[in-house]
Image (cartoon, helix red, strand yellow):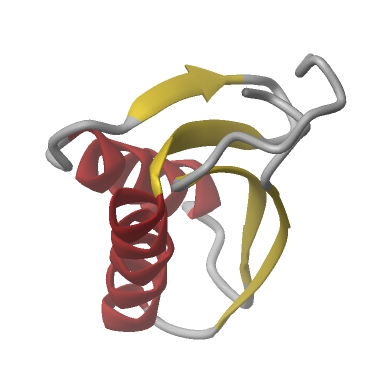
Length: 89
């Protein structure tokens, strides 16, 4: 966790993707997570219930866009996320 002081220009995001109406939801989640690995400057940590990523603001928002685009291509989804300029940095 962070020091409690905000980190200028940096953000962290904890995201949980929920593909809806698809029995092969794991494959969709893996595709979305793989899309994160293609973003330069993004530090990604994988967990059983969510994925955390951090970096410069633009990289983090590109990560959110990558998750959204990948999930949208595959069908219906819900994406929950929390952004912070302190936690996870």
